[in-house]
Image (cartoon, rainbow, N blue to C red; front, side):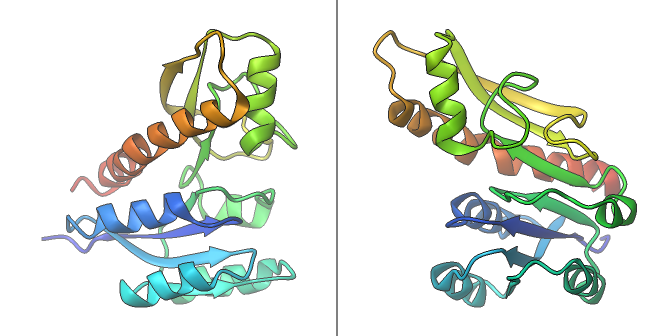
Length: 192
């Protein structure tokens, strides 16, 4: 059996998608979540990581040198952005070519770019009277939300949709599909 591919999850919020990826990874042997990096203090996520034998690091102020050292020390092969709100620097792009995945809460290329995250996206979708929205998992490049799309999943909007109700629909899509896309992409890299 090959060694599992080692991934790091990068977060800026509560980490619900990161927790889900970790929980799902424990069911197989091809993927190993080795590290979670957070831009915010997150005691709940830190405790969860401790219970699941995943290293947790809070880095604020943001320091790319520390990040590079962490991913090197943990032998990280793929970075996965799960609600991570900082722009990825050229240094990380060069370290992980075609190996940085991001989850975005819209059907890109619509509603992407700087400042387009979370409820801001859902407000715009409703303001523009879209009939559907969804999630996109894509590779990260030097521009916000413009990397090659790996997978998309959609949901319909009702006439009385609110940003909050759409957010709940999007959250369900994320929890259902994000881990499977990450694992499939990583498995293809290693041919697990």
